[in-house]
Image 1 (cartoon, rainbow, N blue to C red):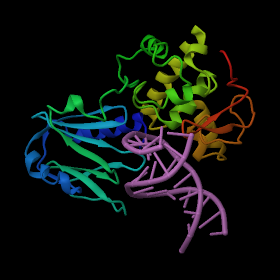
Image 2 (image 1 turned 90 degrees about the vertical axis):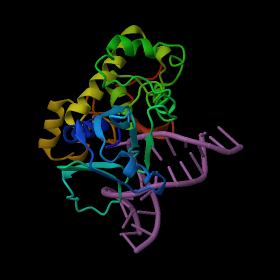
Image 3 (image 1 turned 60 degrees about the vertical axis):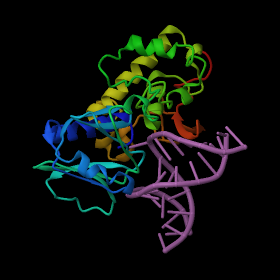
Length: 276
DNA sequence: TCTTTATGGTGAG
DNA sequence: TCACCCTAAAGAT
């Protein structure tokens, strides 16, 4: 569950069973965090929040459990003390009187006091999260057009958590395809219409992915691809991981390149390079 | 069974 | 830009 929308969904699931409840027991796999098992025991869990791909389980005394799932971490919610049959390593467990919230495989877990939270190295400098309701299209356009960002290639900018928090590698490709913009284009090369398309794609696709659990294709295209049976796995995405397959709009084979150290997928006909 | 890849991120040069 | 770390699953042999 790696990108912002999936993390936010996981936080919602945790919230439903943890928020407002006393945490009766905790388990930390990492030795340096063991001391917190007794310190946090019996406190009430106030909320489960996300900032981009970062998650915070907040306790009523202000202490937070910070976690980042990277590529591998996975949250499970189960009835109390029932563990899924998985070969994965349990890294963190929060038990109420009814439920167990279990974090598997994640390696980036920490406990942060209220005083240290504002200075936390991983949270400082994050951009706005497009899942937040107060982030609208105008705000995204303004950010794209701001001095630190307008000269940067979109391929790199869209992965920068300081630009917008929560976007990741599949959203990058999907956003650029939806906006019809080549990955090497910079915001300063975009006319107002192109900037507006880009901002709309950032918000629409991130929020769609949140609603659908990671499907960025339009609902009708997704249904059509699934029903055709040919592209089950790839049905989620319009371009991402579709190298060599026909573009869903024009039929040209989808390109794959390395940009910003990660793979980006695009259609060279629907997303022409140069000024847009 | 071995190798490669992955929806993430850091730090060195 | 690169090497590297984390862990799991898919792909190649």
